[in-house]
Image (spheres, rainbow, N blue to C red):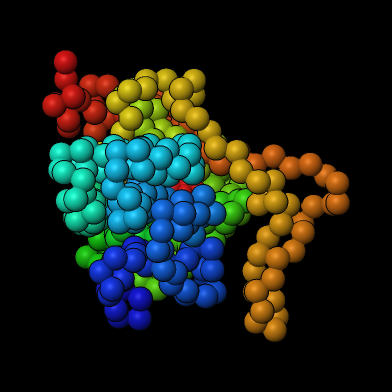
Length: 368
Ligand SMILES: CSC[C@H]1O[C@H](OP(=O)(O)O)[C@H](O)[C@@H]1O
């Protein structure tokens, strides 16, 4: 994506050829700060503390984390330790394990003295692949926005098409383009008058602080709303389409995504609003079927629920407590939307039903 006209990715090799640089997403939307990752520990911290977040970007960062580890020590033992440290950072997005497995496979094929170069090469490929995949997701998903726009214009003489999204599944959740937001960028750039309802997405406010930030940079009309607003908007015909991202899709088509997604899908079903999920194929976990029973749901620090960070009137960035002293808080990071509530899955290979048949139709290599 472009920031002030400059094409910018969320993660990139530093000019010195060995460190890695990222946008520190904990500083957005008010401050744009880049951070250097110089070690395995730096990469693990960046994922765990959510300087980077979003399933594909977590995978990309872990890939470079393995490269930084290999630079320090390329032995089998050291790489196994690095794998385990990175794998333990966050449990839900399957892209983390996918990327780590990709790296271990690539490094296992070469002698120890060639592993550092192989690691940096594979990490760079994973990033470039993510950009291409997400661009294709954007093209495929844009057909849905085009159809929704034509339908809204015919049915009610609409002057815009309204898409609701939850959390951040945009450029900032990937290396570039995003997943759920990629179709929005493609439609907007093609001249379709798309407007986005942006769920703020409590408690970390990825929608308010990240999705709104990137849509603002790209000039896409949008409105930030409280998470509980979507059902009301759907009841009043103000949402033509929902598109969300995901951290893990099962072989049955169940969708794990940011907490609150399931409730949005229920409202969409009740109001006959199409509810689509955008995902790159590394987000499919073919080894699990029942998402509710099998996907680990991350529980994060209660402080993310009891405190909020923002810009004070004097422009300083402050954190405030929004709950009473002593009131416990629960902070589940994700929920699972059963496939029956999903209208379809938007992938780089096309759009399919959220079902075993739909997924295997797009990925026949998974048959048998
Ligand atoms: C394209 S994956 C985006 C996905 O990741 C987010 O979770 P987090 O910000 O905690 O990493 C959220 O579930 C998004 O839908």
